[in-house]
Image (tube, rainbow, N blue to C red):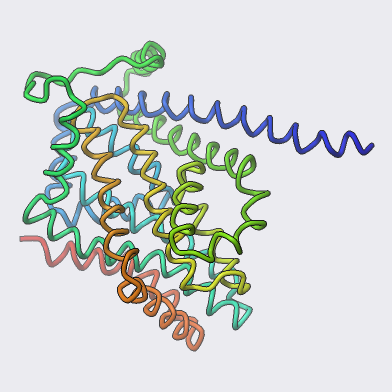
Length: 369
């Protein structure tokens, strides 16, 4: 009986490893299918996509709304990479969309905090932890979006770095796919369905399923047993918390999962709000590996967008992580919001509506000619 109890965790871990492998294969396949589908869409559909994303504020909101709805920035950014790889979206148009996805993914941790709404003191700390991720990404976007819109700050750096991976960056001919091992199957499926939009929808669903499967399997294999045991050790030092957040998010493929783990830790006083912030910054960088995997097609635009996703979060970390005074600004704002939400619970709900819906719509309205 004792032997069986010892073998059971090993069997479960083996299953998690197999699921992880299947999830990676499914992810590669679904991204490939998405790219093939986007490449086969007709010109009118491509034109509609280009028109919708020509305004950077509209593009920002699309990324935010898509991520808020499906709760996975990894899915959204991977899909954007595939669209860019297919030539239906320029890098400059895609950058604000990725920024929006960065903000949209923070909704989950804020919603998790509302599970403590009936526990007065815990709710204050939980909502502060949930909102902290939001505030960090929002401030980062406020700083970087104007620089990108007016100076193509991120795009130029990304284009330069991406060109180092491309044998002939001056090539201006038609877009061609780099063959991957899933291509025969994805092309057969696309030719069988013969409806590119339907293939696109199926591919997006499969991307989402693959990331959820990967997140669940890695969490069970590597995070579940260790996170609670070593969290006190990890959060003692700023740099260690940052590296830990980056490592686990890269493994789990979801900043949503890792940052949501922080909410109960902060709510139950296992970790202070201040010490949780470097972990959140690291998690933001760790999640960019998904777009990197999706960009293995080796088209310059796709690689450049994956680099942009990394740069957004890297510059965010560079702004806040080294300087305690600056690092405390989002923490103090989050703590203030937690205090106000405790006094009037409606404020928490109003914050979600304003941040993820009303304000973006207003920005779109005032940005139209």
